[in-house]
Length: 141
Image (cartoon, rainbow, N blue to C red; front, side):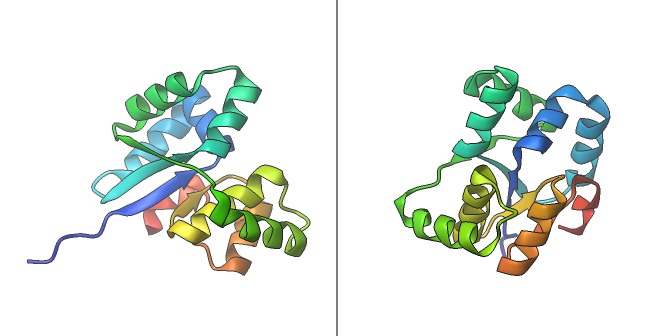
């Protein structure tokens, strides 16, 4: 018997903020993930950005997303190995701001699927071979 592979989905900061602040978005994403073998990943860059923009602690963010989606959260960090890729992405895609290039690098290195509202980031993902979805399209996972 084959064990189902669990796909890891990284959430961008814009998605995290909308999940916390907009119940309709939260309900929609939770419904689209129902029945799928996925694990939700939050990277340090996203946590830091949401903390900075909304003033929530990392612990509060993790607790809220866990409760909203009904799934455990895995934490991941951009490390030294990702730094070269971050710089390459920054040089290659001027549209990627400092946080986006780190998230993209991490998703590329760890084979995460990225969920974001950011259309430019979705385009950059397409160019570097990272699977990415707008939250309304998550059924495709």
